[in-house]
Length: 462
Image (spheres, rainbow, N blue to C red):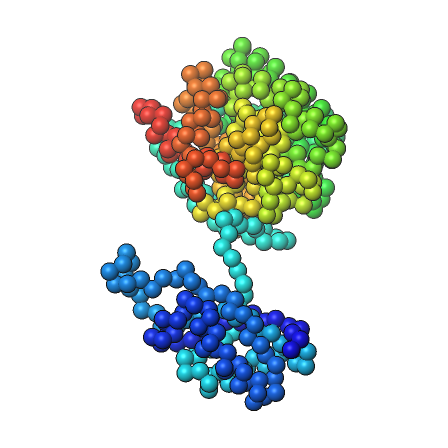
């Protein structure tokens, strides 16, 4: 018989003692089913072939009473089969109904049959397309990272200055807005005049964790084309703007410190990444070059006692962002430049149930920068508690939450006593482990855990 269709079906059988004993052996199950299919073809002039026992759940163990688990009564067995349909018969629902009726007559243990939708377990999750599927809510995200411990121990972000390097925040909705820096990027708003939802999401996530932090604005990312996400069309032009404003911020912060203006620690939050290296000339001149002027400036910020947080990027191997270059996706090729800098906290994304998100850029990082990237992960793909329409997604949302944790801790942890490299190490050491006891290239050292970090600091009550 020439097979033109292969149909995957499930067959449900009553678990008689004989079938239960034979259930782990596909060959014996086939011996039970095959005569019924042969008889159906002879009687009805059909040509259905039982081509394979596609799957038996062989990892189901019917444990003995004295085993580690209680014995479970099993009254149904499910077998997945592949049926081949020949040239002389097109597949139809009527054919399957006819077959099911015949099997009911022929097999004393037959219960029913239906379509088997193949699936497989995965250690990652991808949101639905074209609209994202938000998995959980802000409350669950806060619980996962131990948010409650921060407020209980006086870690509120009070006196901490957080610079949001993004598309521009809206000062009118931020009670503790403190100013910002203008960039040369064509079309970028003045500090505090941004209306882009991406920057609004960043501020929400930072202030949810560190509600008393001061917010500064640095609208560096180019404005979005209506209906499309932001992008960096020319890497060298963008980095020129980034370097200029970065150096200006460092000079101004040094001036503020010298004159007592805006006292307290500083945190830079960068929810941007290079997704496509085709405009990087020459290749790897920024993405894997510690001597690039912008990478040097990032190191200078950390050396000046400023905590620097970067998102990992959204070019993971399973569902990369459409903006990601074909050669800039997956392991070793998606955490680039400053996002791979050894002195920054690089943040990937998980769901609120700790499942790794398949778009989160995966390490290792760049060999001439830091291969141990990302450093850790934080939650993403969650909605607001009382607003299901407003979502938080991407490694951007995760980096905003992580920056909030850093800002909250900084309200009681001085950067002179605890320089950025030490605070970063504390967060790595106290991260919630997921699949491994060490680090891996998906989640880094685990999920940021503010409660564990507070316990490790062992500070007296404020």
